Image (cartoon, rainbow, N blue to C red; front, side, top):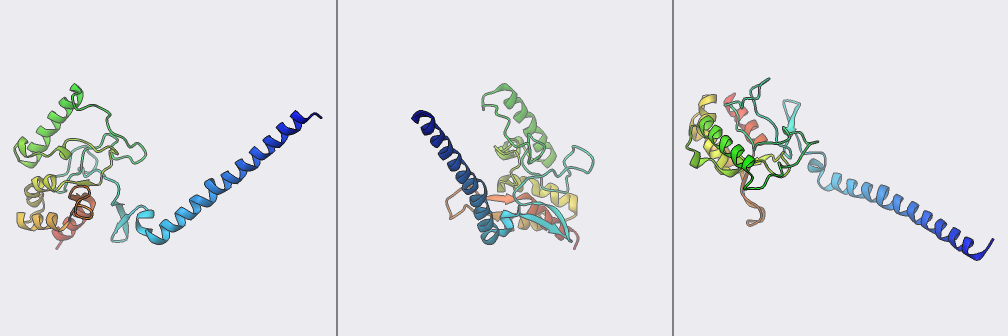
Amino acid sequence: MNNSVLNTGRMVWAALRMLLVLTVVTGILYPLLVTGIGQLAFNDKASGSMVEVDGKEVGSRLIGQSWNIKGTDEPDPKWFQGRPSNSGYDPLATGSSQLGASDPRLVKAVTAAKKQVAEFNGVPESKVPADAVTGSASAIDPDISPDYADIQVERVAEANGLTVAQVQKLVDDHTTDRALGFLGEPRVNVLDLNIALKELAEH
């Protein structure tokens, strides 16, 4: 057997050993290490931030969901509504519409959505914030802006037999400020807000 064949064989064997080592390190050991750290240090978030009410899972704080009238595509006036979703709030089919701001299809959809949101909440279209009529990049954003929550207060209060002051306090109590005081925007988690709303309406 000549030297070139031997050298090729050695290189192939070295490459296979390196492939095996890297597969074990990056494909098994590293994921196990990161998962272990996540479970120990951030157990709730690493487990999906699932929320239970009366012993039953009702959703995740990290994933937006529909708040429609059961069995329909109509938004339920009793609940605060989240951002629109191009995926139907399916976490396995996330993604934005990929339409540019000047795309006629997006302009038409936003115009129609703004009218619908304004009528549903009994406010002028000028009061409808952008996040009420546009989806997030993930299509499953669990949060809305305080402005969007505020325009829903009167409708939610009336539908649940509560005062506007009671519901506004819920919104204020569930508004999270910017991280570290300057990162991101103030936000309201819709799931947490609606759980608190349910508790208030039942007492």
